[in-house]
Image (cartoon, rainbow over all chains, first blue to last red):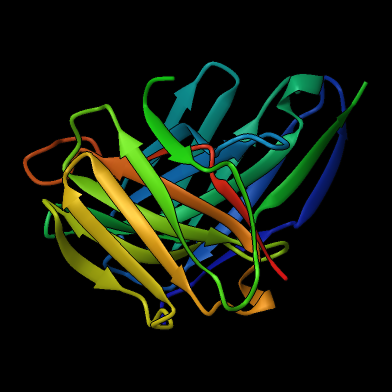
Length: 114
Length: 115
């Protein structure tokens, strides 16, 4: 079936360093790739997304890259700060009947050490 | 609270109980979703509704029964649950049909414990 693999499951970085999280998806029909951040005890919130017609997107310290041929996409966080500590989920989806079936990765727990 | 709300936030129930989870969205969206979030597992999509019609049912056991009376409200009726059903149940909504944004907005979740 459709699945999304996400690595690493945990990641510790020093404050100011960069963090990279990678995802691989199986369904070649996927055309939308969001990244969600979930802080402890809180709801997942969208931080950045990318559509299949774009290879890279950047928003301040956060960027996402997509390689459709390889079915890979990655989240890059530069100049990490303690408040970046959270669990990050990638997802792959396609639109069907006006809805979007997200297949989520297993999550990456990022710890930014001060 | 605006956006997507869920009640109750915490629920403890026995295996023979019947309870319901409620989700309400104040965003004018047309699509709503139920997810199950267990420790060390990906968010599992359970049900998808578009304009009150169920469009996705991901092989969820019949002890979970969704209901969508209108585009703003979504319920998950629970009956004869098992301890392994203990998890965080998240509701989400998106613009849906006719919308241009794919983003799903999540509620705060209901933490369910089945004894």
